[in-house]
Length: 249
Image: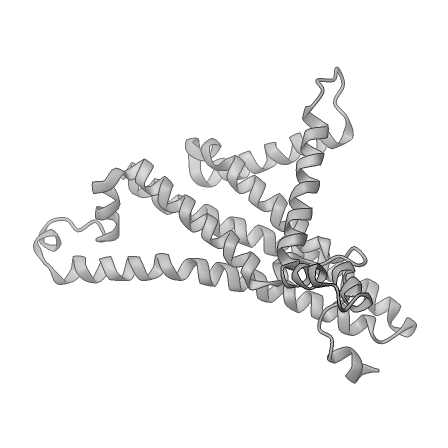
């Protein structure tokens, strides 16, 4: 039984089950090939519907979901303000949305016949690239072109400003670090979520005798999903902090 479960590192989802049921269906094969995109879109659609439901009517007394969202937004804004300062409000929507989306995808695999899209590197890399592009955009917006180049050169002053080796060395190091960030950011999230999904799949293959272990592991996976979404957004916040510090100095 253990060997059989180890051969399947993921629990079956409704797409893979349909593909097995109808192996000659061409569109199901295409759907299975892009299943990570499908599940990420499903999560995005659920979040959009939830937000639409909360904001479509102005009620005298807010509902539970609206109160929960307001508490979350306030907590994120306070947290970012403690790190980024007065300019935190500009980045709260992006980082807050990123946290909700990543956390929802992390936990979506715990629903029967669903899958965590963040267990695939293609999904986490796309998220990391969004962070990379937005950080670069914010850098150009805050520092302008000359300030951004100065940032990449390591802000040389005095004697260092007239040297060639140090600014060039700092320039290539900064470029390398900027390019490495999306890879490290995406691999960290993908590896942890994939490991959690594999753990649940292996324990599920042990049968009814492993139910207590499965429940305990599920609790650990929920905690890990929250932590990983938080780590992803915290690192994103740090990237913005580096820009703001250079802009203020």
